[in-house]
Amino acid sequence: MAATFEQFLAGFILPLLGGGPVHVSRPLRPRERDEWLGDVTRAGTALRYLRLRRAQHLIPHPALPEPDDEELSLWIGLHNTLVFDHPDRARVWSRASMWRRVEGATRTLLTLPFPSSVGASVARHVTVGAFLQAQRTDVLLTNASGEHRFAGQDPPRRRFFGGTIPGTARNETRDWLGLPHAPEAVRLIDDALRASPLTCLLEPRRAPSGWSPLLAVDALRERGLARAVVYHWARGKDWIQVGGAVMSALLPSVAPKPAEPPQPQGPGAMLALPGAVPASDSASLAALVGALIHLHFLKVLEFDARLGLALGSRDPGILAFLALPLLLPTLGHVLGSPLAGTPSRGASLGLERFESGADRLWTEYLDHLGELVPKAAVENLLAGLVPAIVKPA
Image 1 (tube, one colour):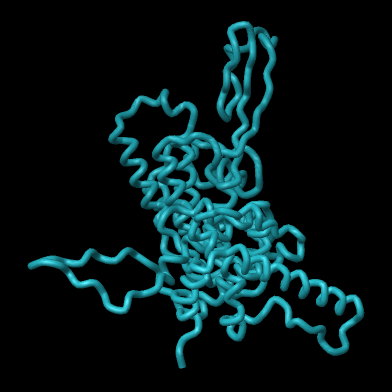
Image 2 (cartoon, helix red, strand yellow):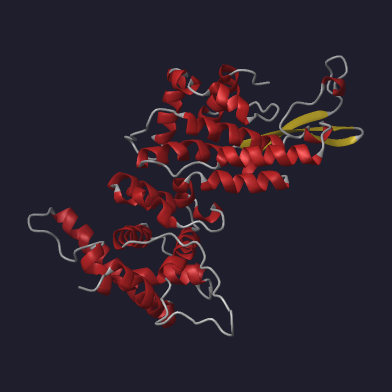
């Protein structure tokens, strides 16, 4: 049981960030967070080292701020999220109203201000990213009475007789995120993701509803971090779905605007309030679209641009993502081009051959996209996205 911050640090925070079994106790209350305020700044070098090491998995030289009270709230909120999935929860006698209060208090802890800097965004991702990668090791004990699963914990001693195992025991490790969860945990996972916009940008298919990539677009304005994000997108075989998820979240912000707003019908009629759509400026949209086009280019260079996987898709986000490179004739003067098309003067023979081969592959890829992508998908982007990036003079 985490009675002090030092126990919480050693039993939960450090194993979460550094790897190892995390210890989940009773739900922690906002009162304990208030009592521990300031302790995080005196947590020692182990915490700073693990935060830095995890951040370096993303970028080599992260500029992380010092651990603060917002991170403390995030750690406590994630701890309580795991409490709802604890296998012994059913054995705890408590009214449903108490669990509702715990969920509400945890949601309050996870409702954090927007990150104050790119470094703060990376720090949030260090914790939430580690949380998403958590695994649970179950022990499966098989004996004459059948197979018994002990979720995330060792079998009780009464299952063993004099140190002799009545049957066989084996471990089974699975990703915690893919396991069935309690309803409260499902809701709180979404709250944890909302607290880390960079995590949502890196893992858009796991992002909660209502999320927009524009919330994390500042990360794409730093070259090193933008490169890390694009390479993360390109890591898997589902890169088209990843790009489609980003575009699906972006499309509400760049939908073509009607010439005149609709007028209310009938006496006393009122218009519905518009949904919450993040503000978009041309520089932010250009950074995001440039990163998505660069994802296409990376897969072309890897000879991994298998567009056949997307044939027949009717997902508007996927179609919009596939259409983005076809906008380069219109957006090229703003975004630039993956390749200039001709080797620079004085370039080595190897570089000339690379640029020539890459230019040929890219041209062939664009031709293939032109045959695959429906014309309507391109026209929709020309009507909504392009005018938002290329402002009229």
